[in-house]
Length: 352
Image (cartoon, rainbow, N blue to C red; front, side, top):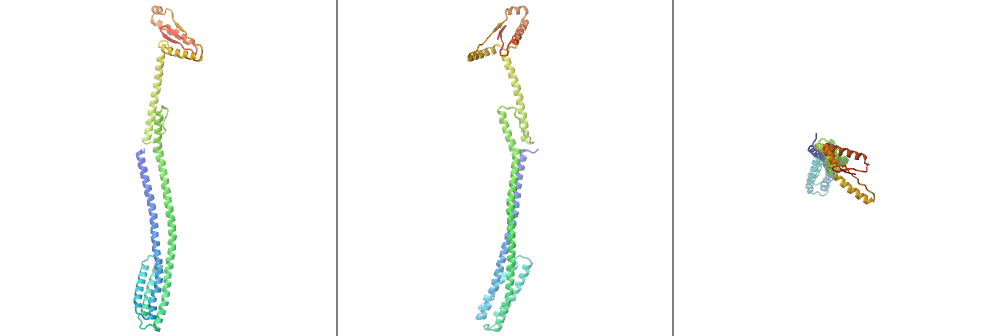
């Protein structure tokens, strides 16, 4: 038997578990989406680094080109600053997570950047560079070499953009998944909540309301009412005891009605003859007189007595006298119409 307390506690625990389960599912999906967004930010950083690397490679040639034109050794400091910035960019590119192609390309760019740096340093440390054919030749070689480096940087950019497109597709799919899981979880939670409410309503609320209505019905006097609660919990037991109580009350009222009817008959009946007694006769006579006056109809009243009844009693005894009264009462009653009534007024006197 499952009691009311067990039903309430079980319902509360079920609701709590459903809430925790829904929260856990949503948390997992949101965490997955958050990871994807974090990965997208990493890919965005890759795109920024690849674009920045292309610009830095182009700028890296400027100090050497200016040095060939002006011969200003201050361009060496500019080159040092640019090469340091470019090295930091390449270092960050190598630290970015990616596939094998990304790592291989990053290593090649790093190696090519070292070679380009050596070529440009060789140009920057040529004495009297202005109009120097050797310096111009080395600068041309550096330009040609930088073109390959720029192409590799463009490959970086292409890989980053491709990865960004894939991540966008993944993010869209996971966003749809989050939306589906979120609304699905809400739907499942609402469904379970509805089923739980229906269970609570059928097992507790409706039986309690039925019990309340049953009490009101019985209190209004309808002792034929019975509860139809069939649960095996405390409410079912209470309903069973309620039906038993109502049955006892119904039996008691039936017995009481019988006793009241019996008492009423005793109150209006003569015990010796079984005819109506004087009290009933006087009340009935007043009622019939009023009826006759109201409808202007005739009314007949006959009084009957036994002559010399006292002498009969003295001669034959009171028992024989009682028998005579019974016989006369029976004869009068048999001769009466349905609408007539006969009463014993007292002693040997009768009224019809």
